[in-house]
Amino acid sequence: QLQLQESGGGSVQAGGSLRLACTASGVSANAYCMGWFRQIPGKERMGVAAVDSDGSTNYADSVKGRFTISRDNDKNTIYLEMNNMKYEDTAMYYCAAIRGASPLLFRLSSAAAEYILWGQGTQVTVSS
Image (cartoon, rainbow, N blue to C red):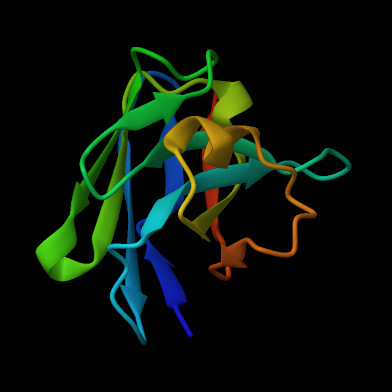
C-alpha cells in the first residue's frame, strides 16, 4: 500500500513563497499520478496540481503561473513550489495519489473518490 507523507507547510506573507514536499513509501509510486488538493473549512477539497511519472502536469487556473509541481521518481517525491502567494491560497494542502490517472483526471477527481490515496495534510497560511 502506498503511503504519503507531506512536509513544508507554514505561514507566509502575501507575495511570498513556500515549498511543499510529499514522499511516497511502501511501494513504487511510478504507476501513480501524484499531486495536491487543498481545502478550506466548509468547502470542498479541490485539485490544485498534478504530475505524472513522465513529468506531464496539470494545474488549476487559480494557481497557473504561480505554482510549479515537479517530481523526482528516484526519491518517490513530488514538490509544489508556491510563489507570489495570495491570501486565498490559505488552506490545508493534501498530497494525493491515483493509480493510472492522467494529471487532468487527477485534478478533476472528486475528493470523495475511493481510489484516491491521501497524506495527512499540511496547513498553509498566507497573511495579507
